[in-house]
Length: 468
Image (spheres, rainbow, N blue to C red):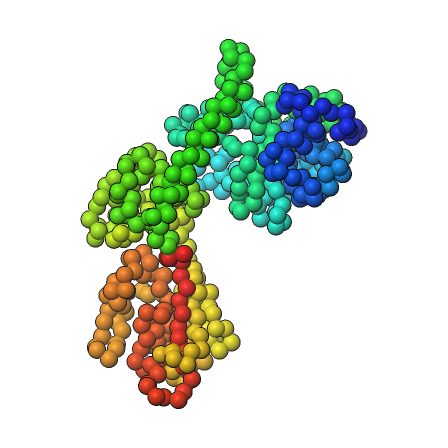
């Protein structure tokens, strides 16, 4: 549609009825039910410039003065279409007509192997939005009733479980920020009526007609057929999703209680998981993976994790991998990793030069910190240390010479109970080719303070993420 001079909506003329009478007062009532109070809130709208987000931004703009809201918009340019830059400029112009500041965020979308373009774009969009939010700011999206129906249908086609079928919730979190979807009960047609009644324009993304994308195919081909037979299909699917969401909350509370007994720092204790009935064990594992923002494994891998992996001998050290994540077992501990963690370790800083006098704590390339802390009872004789040390990770075949002879570094780390994948992240403190210390696990006799010696002392301290 061409741009027209906007007419500012007057909240006083709106009646706070059902979502079939969408307007500022209905939105105010909905937001209060979701976050209790609006007074002096900072709200940020994920603004595409399309019909739905324009209706949300317009209604919020009408509430801004009355509720003392701080309101702004963020538009994400995915750079996936030749006209993406034009749409970004149009979104900023539309927001300016509504007297709302709008910033454009430009992202590069990269698809992992097996990942759809839609999923990759969504992940890039939320990363960009979260990176720009201020502390305490609330992010709002304009997902509506038909979007919820499409999400439920997509979950059915993918064979999703309770989490997928419960679809989108009105209140959730993303990157530690509150995420609101206040328009989930509102039909798309009512949002269009709201804007047209006020002669407010919006942008149309031509990619929304491309039926190669699953959501567009559902919207343009499948949903019209469903609606012709069952006119209330979007509303009823939304009710089903809400009921499933309630059931999911109950199961997650059960999982939380069971996980409290199983937690061992970053890991879960296998012996505790084994005692759970099989369905509750799967429920606990799904909740735990979700806490760590890891993708869910498919049904086959989940059966492998909850069965053979947990029941294997304690020295078997099995590993189950899927797109974006992996689980590893070491003894009685089950640990989860993002798919990028192994690559991050390989790319970690190979050698760091450490001036320990000027920098008591050193950030490690593989994660964590290494420190040298003054301690009158410490075992490190500071006068023996050179002013600059080198820190690297193990390679292969390192041996340590102590008062009882030599020992392989691999054997030392095994004695200390570190899992094989944890051993690659243990920092070695070096002087030339000599190993001064292995984190805070071992110290060369050459640098050990002798009893009664008056020299200054210290201790190495290693803070790692294995037991966070």
